[in-house]
Length: 319
Ligand code: UDP
Image (tube, rainbow, N blue to C red; front, side):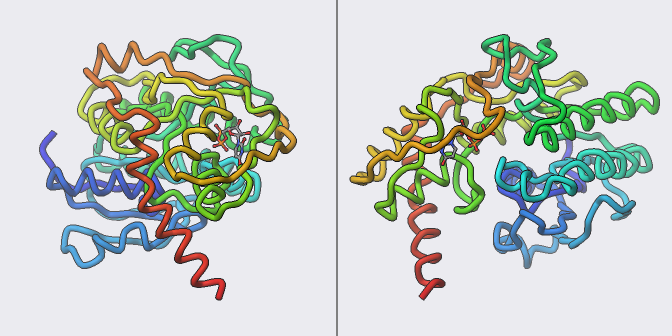
């Protein structure tokens, strides 16, 4: 895959901005299109003065054209349960209309295409761990459906453009990823616990904390994306860390890494919160030779500086 010009929708978000860095590192020119609904310009500040970088503030729910591109990375969407609950209708629109528009760009320029999908396609899974062949257990009318069904539809549109228009597509199913540039207030469990621990507040565990998640450090996740981008696999591939933790164990890791004396406070479990989640990554191992390298404790340590600074900045701004 020789580096040329890539479009990254949602490139100002947590994962999108790390993806831009990886593409830059390989010599690509990158144009980001983002409406900054949940993304932040600050995530791309370090690229701003580079002649290989362009930023266009735009909502991709309207048709758009950025000129010739060789690769489309379609990453635009709110992704945390708090964000997609607040922005339910924009989440449905970007997964549907936005996906059509991103695919139209790929079709027009004969560009390759990779889209971010999610473990939420498996819903509250009855198969464990989740293989790509599992069709999922999603409540189509529940509070999470705005994200889950949007992403399932995203996958359907992507496969249709592949089948009917021969677009060279890829689909990555992302499992809980964490690391620097996550927004402090996006509501996901790692930023919530890190922020609470660093402020000396109680860590809010929802339910009894026995539900599980499998946490992947951002650099491992991005390595998986880049390998998939170079492959010619059209069917979905799980990229996530298969080491599974209860949420209570996650809280304990955060307390240990931060050295915080915070206590645990139990709060109600949100509706339809999946009880367990763990990727089966056999396909990624065999197809891409991909394997996550960073365990949860190491990844939390690698994220600590970022969260410390973010908490300090927020405190300074509040003054
Ligand atoms: N969670 C929690 N406390 C928090 C935030 C989240 O106990 O402050 C739980 C949440 O109920 C879920 C898990 O942590 O079981 C992961 O939540 P997150 O919002 O990070 O992402 P999800 O995997 O649910 O999309």
